[in-house]
Amino acid sequence: MPISQKQSEKPAKLLHPKTAMQFVRLWEIPGSDHLINGNADFPNIYARQDRLVGQVIDACIALHVYEQIKAHASYNSLKPLLSDNFSETQFDKLAKLPDDKQAPGGSELLKAIIELSQNKGKDKGLKTHSDLVSKKEWKSYIDEFREYEKKYIEWKVDAYSKKDAIEQSESPSYYTSVKNKKITINKAPERPEDPRVTRINKEIAQTITILDPGPKAKDSIEAKASNRGNAEITSFRDLNRIGVLPTETTHADDFITIIANLNPPKSVKQNQVPRFFEEQAEIFDHGYFNKKLFVALDRCKERDGGVTNGNIASIAEIKIVPAKMLDAEKLTAITKPLRDMLARPEIYISHSDTDVTPQVNRGKLKTDYEAKKADFIRLSEKLGVQYKFPEFNIREPNNPGSYRDLRQEFNKLSTRIHVDAIKKENRTWQEEYLKTATIQDLAGSNEQYLDRINRKLSTNLPRTDKMEHSWLEEIAHSVNLDLKEITRKLREEFKLGKMTATSSRQR
Image (cartoon, rainbow, N blue to C red):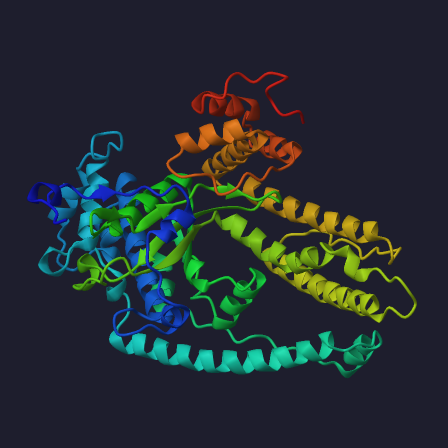
């Protein structure tokens, strides 16, 4: 039946996904080959990364200018980030705009700065990522990156061959022979850093820092798919990824507002499909904290002069992390493989004298332990921190409890590192950390609380992990924050009722 004129004029409905997976499902993700290699209408994974980095740079320039104007910075101090034709008179008018975020429509100052970041030609107000390097510098970077890719593939082939030689040996004594022959896996080649990121980070460090890990490598994509039971990579949200380290939570909030404005919804048939999704902050049970944003990378008229047909896009991840938490993550990433290996103590248990495989697994565990310990000590010294690496105290090789105890030691170490990291952060991050941990704790205490909290939040909690309460008390005490008061206010905000001996989870 044909649609009537009246029906066709209905305003498009703005969709509101509540989870990251719901957001992904709003988009038609190309097949695996096109996701990596692209096609005539869809950029490849490297071109998408360049655009993601460019968008985040533009957002960070706008953020830094906004935060500095609020702090009464001068025209001359911000001139490196202003376009050549943006005069001091224009700057003075900009700086006098109201900054009331509670007003209808939000801050006039922030809206004006976002608009300046999108203007082109004679109306251009802020520099953008394309102004940071010359064409010659960019070409040099592209050539360097291609050379890196070639060396990385060669290194990976060599590393896998050596790793396979070790892991596939059935003789426990093989580890000794490997050690005696000093067979080592060479260090991976370093990926060249995007010169735009290098240059802009020097200007904006007071407000935010950009981390560009590059797109996920093809072998990493394949490994992730395998670990998830041969999952389709079309469901992955981090093939393209980037990180930012805001110095305060207010800077993080303003960055999110800017990114949301740089990714307006897209009209697809009768719907307005969001290109941007903000996930709630999350804390893992071992203390790691971060927040993720997701953006749909498609072609759009506002940015590229052309539009990808329909809702074809890939999803990219922007991770927000406090700077000290990033250092903690680097340290705990070293111990994670050991924690994973110790999660299955049954593979180390011999049931007979002829059972060789458990002995081989024990040998590999010990070898990996020594390697990770050396890496951990080196990075600790580089970061200027001191932590005691758990002793390899497997006194009863056939007792599963020995492996579980060692794993628990590594879990405690991981939590200690993350807790120490947040204690060194800006106070706004400490408050955010305790608030996030408490919300997850309340949500995880019963299904009714989880439902009430998710209905109140704009998007659902990504997890309900619970840290041991003693860790949270330690953080609160060290920075003179009242954890009970934080809990009381959150219960009130989410209408969870008064905290009593029967309604609160016993610690």
